[in-house]
Length: 138
Image (cartoon, rainbow, N blue to C red):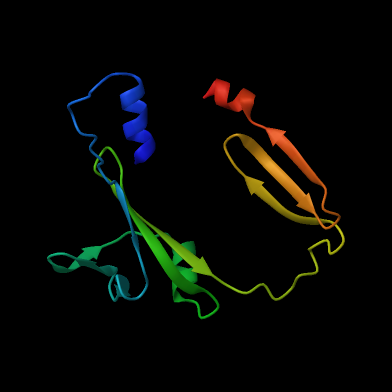
């Protein structure tokens, strides 16, 4: 927020107009802020009490929500510009078979904007793959 005020002040624009923020998303914690009910209804906590909202979900995703192997975590309720509302749900599971992992090699890949990928391995060497061309094409 400070950088927004600083940026408008540097450009000498909008000195007398305060900066406004319109939040288009909010984080929800499971099961306190939201939970699933029967018949395709989700209950979401709001300032006006609990809202009961019907939702659409694919059959493959239903398997994750109904499975005991996957744990439902937080979610982000997001409103798009065309007033379509999405609930992005985070689910978690433990990986039992780790044979596909290379124990002596790759540790992690971090995806970003300035660097498309930053790869780290167990020998503490790092590789950067820049995203200048992608940013230019965007």
